[in-house]
Image 1: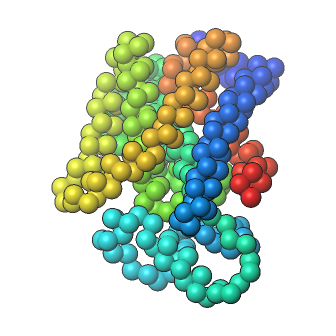
Image 2: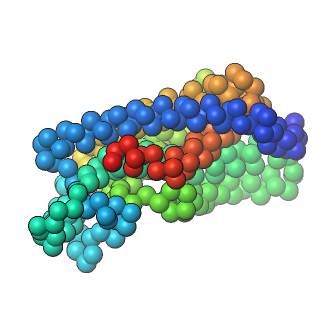
Image 3: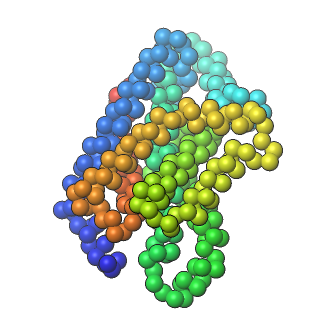
Length: 306
């Protein structure tokens, strides 16, 4: 099937809009679950006074990456991932002692933005892997394949580096993520690598496609390297494992969302198996990212969490 036929099919609004509405409805369900969990956490924090607060007037201007000023990062922060953030809040509290402004707990927003980061990180990787798949399996030009067979492993590495840059662009342009710090971003991106491995394993064994074996091994080694690098300390390893465990609900919700939207896409005929399950997964993620941008700019999360 020619590229033009795929383009005409996927850009047919009569087919794309109903699929998007179903994807958006599924995203609203997922976001509803996240908001319920975030709301429960907020109430528990309020009762235990363990929340992380900033002034309501600063909600739009706060940025976790710029919150630390000139503070020096110490190894002890690995044991207390939110230590610098807490120092920032204590300084602001001292400066504004006696202020009557309403305080907002940002931890529910951190939880929600972690889901956004998971979506964007997965989309960036899937985009480059889909391009890798298309070049490897769908382009039948002899000159391209000669170059590809010689350098495809290095090209995969270059694609993954580009995906990191794209992920950063998504974080800044699509939805500016303000409340998750660098350590939480790193944990979520590690989780997104595990998520991509699960997708590739599913394709490889369920659809019995041998084309992803080398990519699966590459991603597995990348995750292992992230956990067991040459100068790793027990504290760093434990912190990574705790981060994975803490964010498992986000992984499960992402799997449930993508599984449903891909199944519905195949069932309704909007997604074609002939273009590859990996590409279909990417299309489902793009629809999810569009839905996230809409939800963010409608300020639904801020309105519900107050």
